[in-house]
Structures are given as structure tokens and as C-alpha cells.
Image (tube, protein in one colour):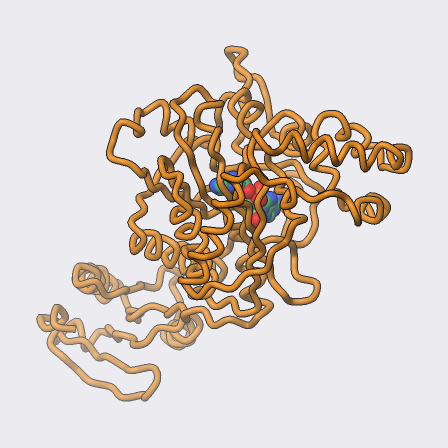
Amino acid sequence: MLTKAPKGTKDILPGQSSKWQYVEGLFRDICRTYGFEEIRTPMFEHTELFVRGVGDTTDVVEKQMYSFDDLAGRNITLKPEGTSPAVRAFIENGLYAQAQPTKLYYITACFRYEKMQKGRYRQFHQMGVEIFGSESPMADAEVISLAKDMLEKSGMKELELRLNSVGCPECRPRHREALKDFLRDRYEQLCETCKGRYEKNPMRILDCKNENCRRLVENAPLMLDYLCDDCRAHFEKVKELLGEMGITFVIDPWIVRGLDYYTKTAFEFVSTREMAQGTVCGGGRYDHLVEQLGGPGVPGVGFGMGEERLLLLLEEEKAAFPVTEGVDYLLVTMGERARKMAVKIAGRLRKNGRSAVCDMMDRSFKNQMKYANKIGAAKVIILGEDEVEKGICSIKDMKTGEQVTISADHVDNL
Ligand code: HAM
């Protein structure tokens, strides 16, 4: 127990962590080129935020939240997603009073008590963006374009964008009624979860993974056929803009999304590889969430990208990660005086931005040279009695075997 991490969590070890740094660095860079700025929100929020934001009939709120009472009796939840906290911060800090739109990005851990499987964890990480304040289809297209740039630049090739519109509170009730009519005769055959959804949130039945439910809804009425004029015009414009940007997509009228706040555009990026693990990036528009959470009537659109899933896919596609280099210098020493000289030289090298490592295991000379290979040191600086006596350094290139001697005073020029 003591030496086992909780189910659904993973350590990111050296060797892996450089890949994480790489994709996160890429994401930050791409967000900057689109004019987004970073927001960092707390790891936990008042439970009520997610109940109201994500929706009380969603799987996330009903079954997956890590909620607990703190010592003062407040009900707290570890964030299961990044959008609701970003909205809360947008309202609380009056960001709506600045020139709009507000364009935010985040990289954050999220927590959902889910059934563990490949690509699905209980602590996972999202890279996400949100644009607040713009109703324009341009905002939808920009967000989609940013996600696509990120996925492609990180090395993903087998990629598909799926697009849908989930309507708005004006047109959704008509679809809801049509769907309920369609399902009325089939109700008894639905799974227990979907029976519960029938009254509360019938659209979620379209998203059920149960084989039987899937078959039952095969010919169900689809939201796309019930869009009001405003939602339809918006959807057309988004498609037109994506066309202008050269972004290909497929219309997928079955995209429902697992969170309740979406209106109009809903999209997902999926891998076209067989056996690929679900959606790597999901997002859409949420024009009423800010108001629903107590803010002004400000629209929003964004996405969340699963880092674990992205890295899994990149590894499966054998994408090239920049090689992490070993250290520039290992200081190989013999004797106490050499060790003292080594710490000073290492300090001077580091001041100049070079990486330098000293042996701290009292290894023999031979084993220090072996260690240099193990840690991928490009060069070793040999400091023996002779070098200390003369104030010089013998530098050996580990690749070519070439050895030069310089005065210790010239270390700053290395
Ligand atoms: P979501 O679809 O729930 O949307 O999650 C976004 C992404 O997070 C998923 O596509 C997936 O890659 C990853 N993900 C979700 N759950 C897990 C898990 N248990 N393990 C590993 N990865 C997971 C949202 O969270 C919305 N906040 C996205 C958004 C932002 N919509 C608008 N703005």
C-alpha cells in the first residue's frame, strides 16, 4: 500500500518528463502565437461550481468527482475539468470589464473517479484554452485551428476533426421532445442509466456506450435537424471559416459531449488509428455558462486536450521527440584537493549556462569514466594530482576521444 500510488495515478519519471515538457512548451508557444495568456486556477473549488457548471445529471458530477468536506465543513471538489474554474475566475476577477475577448490557456491536472483503462486515469492532465466575450464564429474557428496546430506540430498525423452543433435553449426543447417521442416505445429496452436519463437529459442517451442502447438510437432524431435559424447560421459560418483555413472536418451529428454547458458548436479531435484511445481533444461553445455561474451574459468557447492521450498517441505513431541531451561536463577527480577544485570549476561552468556534474559516490577513476558514459556526458574534465599542482584541466571529448589541456583560468571560455 505504502509504496503503491493510488489506482488511476501515474508517476511521470525522468525520461518521460522531458516529453511532457516538450508538448507543454509547444502548447505554450502556440497559444502565444494566437494571443492567449495563461491562467492558473486552484486545484480545488467549491463543489457547487461543478454541480452548476458541468451539470448535475452528467456522469462527471453524478459519479466521478473527488469531493470532501474540509475541516471547516466546506464541500470541496478536486477540479474534474478546467472550464468551470476559468469561468469562476473570469467572473470573480472582473476580467469581463477589460477589452474583450479574454483569451486564456491553462495546463492543469484534473481528477475524475473513472474506470481505469488505457488513456483513462483518475488524475490526468489537460491543456486547454477558453475565449470569453465573442459570439463570432471566428472564435470557434480560431480555437479549433489552435488545437489542430498543436496536435499536428506535436507530431500527430492520423487525426480527424469531428464537428457538430448541439443547438441552444431555444431549439433544444423541440429536439428533446422528438427524442423522447422516439424513445417512448423503446424505453423498457434501455439500460438502467439511460432510463434515468430519459426524463432528466435524454440527449445523453445518444452517447451511451451500451451496445443495445446504441442500436436503439440508430435512427433517432438528431439535433442538427432541429437547429433554430441562429444556430444554423452560426454552424454554417464556422464550417465556412474552417474551409477558408484549410481545415478539413467530418460532420458527426452524434457528438453530444459529456458536459452540460455546451451550446452550438461541439467538436472532437480523434485519432483514426485502430484501437486508439478515445478523444484526444474535445471542446465547443458555451454561451450561457458565465451567466449561469453568476456572471454577466458573456459567451465562451474552448477546448481541453488530454496530455496522457496525446503522449500515448504520439508514442504509438512513433513521433520523434527532441532527444534529451545528457550533461555537458562530468568532473572526474582523484583526491581531496581535486574535488575542491572540481566544485569551483563546476560553479564557473554553470554560471555560463553549461551543465556540469561532480562525482559524489567516491568512485574510482575507472568507474567515474564509466559513469560519464552512463549519464551521456559530452566531455569529462579530468582533475588529478598533476592538474591540481599545475592549475590545469585535461578535457576529454567522449565521442572523439580527443584530449586537450587548458589552464584552469580559461574554464570560463568553455
Ligand atoms: P472533456 O471532453 O471532458 O472536456 O475532456 C477533454 C479531454 O480531456 C478529453 O478529450 C480527453 O482527452 C481528456 N480526458 C478526459 N477525461 C480523462 C481521463 N479520465 N483520463 C485521461 N484523459 C481524460 C472538458 O473537460 C472541457 N472542459 C473542455 C472544454 C474547454 N470545453 C470548452 N472549453
